Length: 147
Image (cartoon, rainbow, N blue to C red; front, top):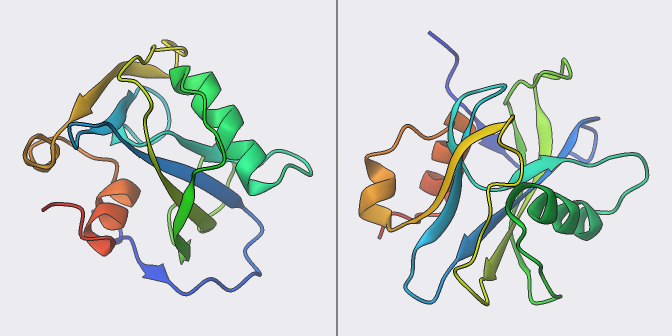
C-alpha cells in the first residue's frame, strides 16, 4: 500500500515544481482528465515546470496542451504546498502551486489521447465517486471542494 499523501507548508527547497488548475464552469462543475500514464486516475490539468518557465506560463502551457482551454490573468493561487507525491522523473515530492479559475466556456478537447483516456466536467458528487489520483484527492480534501 502506498504512503498517504502529505500536504505541508512550502519549503522553497523542493527541486521538482508542479502547477495545477482547478477549473470550474458556470454550472459549478470541475474539469478533470483521466490519466493513462504515470499515476492513473482522474486529475485536474497539471504538470511540471520546464526549464526557466514561471508558474503561470507553465499553467497556460499545460492547460493548452491537455485541454485546449485558454486562460487569462484571472487565476487565483489557492494552494502553495510541499506534497509528497512521486513522479516518473524520479522525485518523491513536489513544490505545488494550484490555481483556481472559472472557465469562459464548457468547450474542452482531449488534446493528448496518448496520455489521457478521457476528459469531462463533473460536479462534486460525481467526483466523490471517481478514482482520483491520490495527489488530487488530497488537494480536493485540503481545499474542502466536496461541498
